[in-house]
Image (cartoon, rainbow, N blue to C red):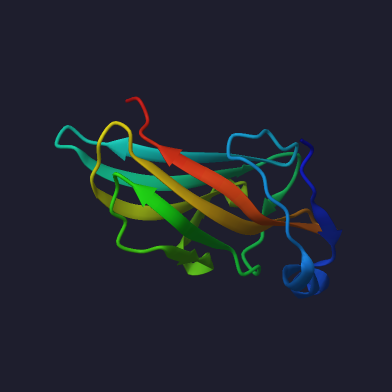
Length: 143
């Protein structure tokens, strides 16, 4: 299924936030970004979840956009926080990569799953695109 994206200037982003809604599964390879949810477990069974978003094709993370990640459900994990906002994001590689650090997930079993939705924006020097309510699924990663 082809994902929808919205193109606008930086000044029109708020209007899109109010009316735009599209969903996609994590791991779907959009031509502009890659979502990489991870639920890592250490040798003591303690989990730690992160969501990496990697921009492609000259796009960078839009620090002005009210990005957010909302956790809908958890099975076999215990995140203490369910809503993450733009101040929870750290960027790297001149804004090409962004990471939501969800923090400790408590004791995590091999079948633990966390579901959520992420909204964010990526920009070039001339335009921005908004991605709303992209579905993400965190599963225990092999290490």
